[in-house]
Length: 625
Picture 1 (cartoon, rainbow, N blue to C red):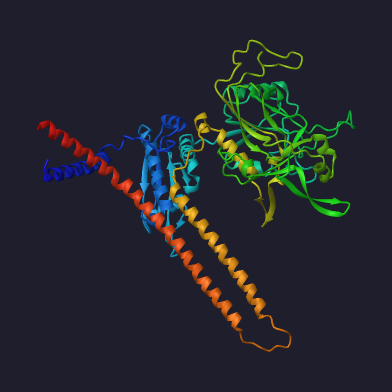
Picture 2: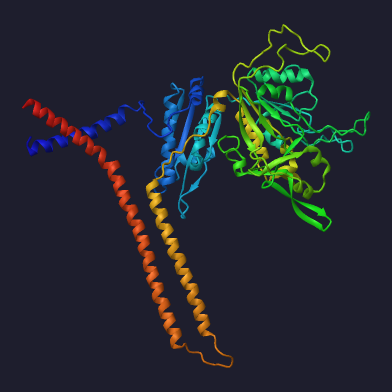
């Protein structure tokens, strides 16, 4: 083959490569192949199921300032990844989901729309230039639901947030939450002096903003079908027919969140008139149901955690002092499950005299911890917490021989009924066999959250109520209410939404580049510390040389001092030069590696294709010869 033929073959191969890419980009837009590690652009089965069930069209508007973000790689790259993922949603929706990618240029009508939808303005430069990276969804009834800011730091929750938005648009009716409680969480009886009803707990006031709350009587035989999620708080002495109603509600697929407590500090029952010396009952449990759900609440035990204990003021023999109170815990960091959407964005949750949950061996359910204690934990007897008033005494007798005690957990899986013989009628006649509506086993996996503390909902553990201009304004200092709202929000809806979990990260760091940078920076720090040590040593010598005997009026530097200063200056210049050398080598290594990676990514593939095409041409030429 002549040189001209080789050149011609290379040009043909290059033209084919460019042409095929252009044609594929324009015509094969519906064909997708996800080759990313962790399949980041492949929708989970839960998202695909929700898209398949769309009856009415849903429109998503992505406001993405691609031009303004040209100098902000974090927003630019993440915006493109969001766009690609949303295109996957549209491709899997059978035409029910329409995607609009809008560039809100400054002072344009699109920017006015973005602001009107509540999309956040992201500052780009000191001159006041802003950009937008947010999403708005609308349904057939023109209901609008925005995600004002698609935060790159929350990329692991991107699919969950988008799928939840689509689900809520497809199911716009406000969800009903049934509340069954022996504590006055929705407000107590009217005050005998003022006649005003007791205030609802602030956590439930906040819950009302998102859901319709329906109070339930403690004596019920059936939970209405219109109730989406059931909240049970401090279930003390519930009748068996009520336990049966909860059992059947969960087996039918109803979602439930149960708050039990070995010592409910907000429970103040009246004394038993028949037995005034008896201790009032302030604990709650659903053991009969829990046994079937695969979880147990340790009886009469309270969780303690040395590192998470709240500091309280205690008046001891030597006066007021600050001391750790073991039953009250501030749960932060690793004590919150950062892989679950209920807790992964929360900073801190406070609990008071919380119990401990444990999975039952051999259970068919899966127990996923949401709130736990730390590595230096242990158990406190309930009686000790009730009667020992000195926090120091609790500390003295405490054994930190446990770790990661479970305070709240998510329970999923198939279960059997706690009432195999059917609906109970009363205490004398325990069952009513032959009920055709009775379920002996769950229709599918149950979805229940159990929390071993009721005080987590009480105001004093998470919020201060302040009065401003005649109004009561909550000032939270913990995320207790957020935990409640997130849990009810996550439980509600359908199983597909609940099944979504955190995804992997889109970004892939250059590990070799980072390693080179770390090594060079370590060398830089070592030399910097050496320089500082030399400076300190020289300054000490200068101070020693400059000390004069009393009465001496000599103000000029001695030859020794001048020599020492010159040595110091020379050493300083030498060290600075070495530091510049380290920085130069660091940048040089990174640039060299960057050029190598660019060549591989940009030039290697076309080169390989060209070589492949040339090889085929040579092979055909030889065969023809």
